[in-house]
Image (cartoon, rainbow, N blue to C red; front, side):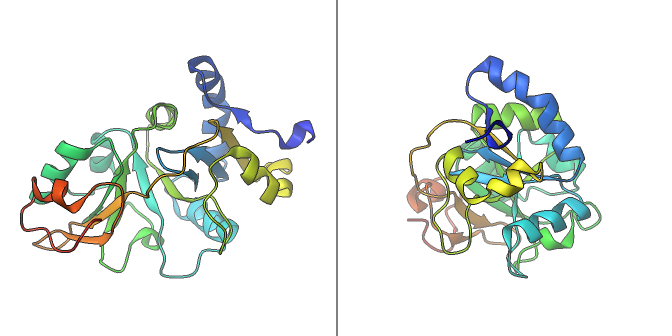
Length: 224
């Protein structure tokens, strides 16, 4: 593998700090980033129209299937005018940072419409991955997130899998890959729609419904 298509080391504290300036520059250039999360590797970009369009083209994402946002602090919600409903506030207090994605109302003037799901909200997760969380804090704004894989292929659990499938994009600078090591395959985040009066599970995942109902007893649907 040539030097042009090697991933950026993103494991130790020193590696993470060294990778952050170039990664922020890459995001400002409206290019696609691959990074580790608490579940699998993700693709993401900045939260602006041009960046989101580039990610849609890169991933080959079908219309009507939005990306979620990763944050590293609740103050990032306010900057995008996203609102924590009472139920969402209780769930966030209990499970964030963690593998729980909340679909929140708001953001009409701050978030591209392509990120809005059929429920009318924006999906958000506070990632507990230490390196990626550090990056987002340094960047100062949320980044988008979708699984790093081609349609029909399983999500990548290593940087090598991504480079093998997107060699040309990485070599040409369109894609920057952060190598956080081999990830253990795990359940995706549980997704709860908090835009209506009653919160509703719309994707089962890592957080069980029994745990969710300890916080919001009127939860609709099953999370596992």
